[in-house]
Image (cartoon, rainbow, N blue to C red; front, side, top):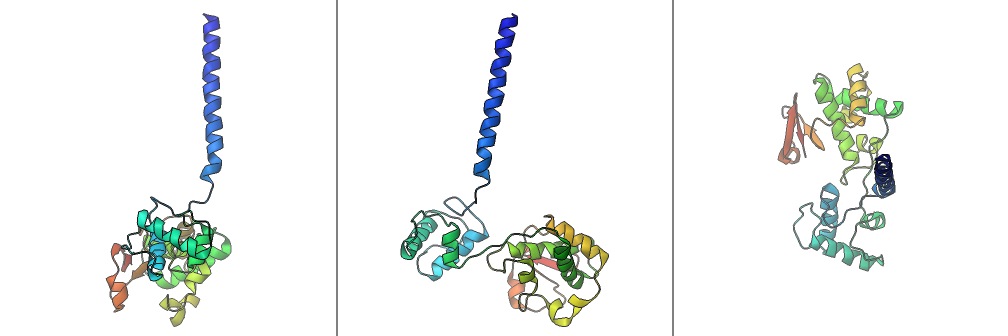
Length: 224
């Protein structure tokens, strides 16, 4: 009986070791860049479709889904550019298309302070979750292909925020804004992915009113 137990223990150990090795081996694949390709969806795919449509290479509707038409259009573009024809929108292909997407930066003191200044300027009198939401919109813009790729680029983008023009950006920063900036940079997004917000009492901008509203927090409507 002891012999059977020993064999069973050895088998279980071997299985566990094999599983651990498989997980370790697979971890390298998980760390590879996730390029847009067949089956992908999202704002990057929408931008790929939009640019290819402008170039006359994509004939379908802009859906944000990377189907056969999008793959074929990417392949045609790669052929025109002398690139390897994979049908995958890798980094080189995106760069040739003029599409760049940034990453939300770390919550360093400098980044927290910069984001907090904008949150404080735009969100005075708003509930705390509304202040975090303003920070989240700025972070979402960094990762969106239609906006600059850096925190400073988004905040200082010409005409993007009235607080820059009217001087509120230079007013003292509320303590709550500092905490809200840290939460937003850490990934808290109460808006569900919004890249715009506005106060309906203070704006008559036709474009912003046309954006689909994702949620309402305090005096602001947050839109995609």
